[in-house]
Image (cartoon, rainbow, N blue to C red):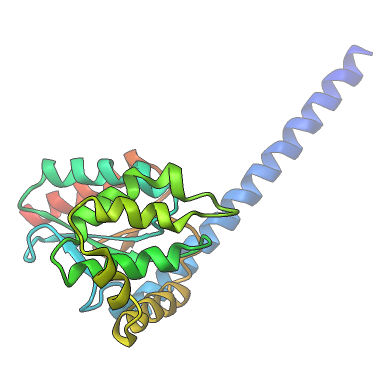
Length: 218
């Protein structure tokens, strides 16, 4: 009986190890495929319309595909800001849109419209702060996002009118085309100087940024 239990345990370990290896291999194939796409279409990482925070000439660029309704994007925003504070002259952030959740496209258009009033980053932070109230994935209450944005001093009536412009529609369309080409399927997705994270997490992001900053000093 004891021998049988040991055999079953060993078999279970082998099965779990095989499953874990299979998952790792699958994730690596996805990552390699995505990096192939990035290498083939590097111009899709950054567009002229993309929002930029930090020195324009910074040697390290973090490109983040984000969704304003994504809880993890909200959690990562202060993490990215802390990284930029750590390397104030070396790192810049470029935001791209991945409106995967219901209603996110409307908030994205509002963000783009807020650029015309010079309030992009204030509106972004207000919308993220209010995210738990408006970003229900089943039934988002976009009016609450608009209310949060208006508290920054944004002329919300003008912004909502501007948000319907063909130019802003084109921005959203371009970002969706780029994320599709780059095989971005979840948010946030980060690229640091064109390199994807080896695995997802704040420590992995910090390590890759530190590595690229160190390279730029050589």
